[in-house]
Image (cartoon, rainbow, N blue to C red; front, side, top):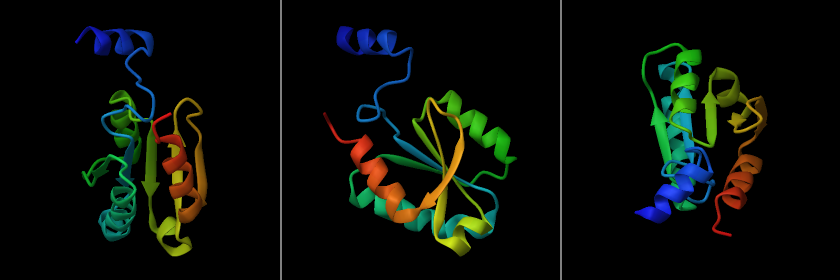
Length: 117
């Protein structure tokens, strides 16, 4: 209990990627994106990455703000463009920039970032 308290205090609530309770959040822009999001979730699950799917009917900015307050290290945004291009838009802490990348590149980045060091 003390150890967890020290970690939370030291990292200001933002635990290292490998220790975060949820490592990746996948937020959709509309209902048409749910299937692709579930597919990405399956890939993450196979690699042992803890993720959360956000299919709420809210504005995207609200979803991103809400997920950021949960201190989730990686937020993936999925829309029609990402589905057609087979890409993901990734927002990672601390950069807070939305970067588009190929699905395979994203999976490799997340797998390397979330492995136990």
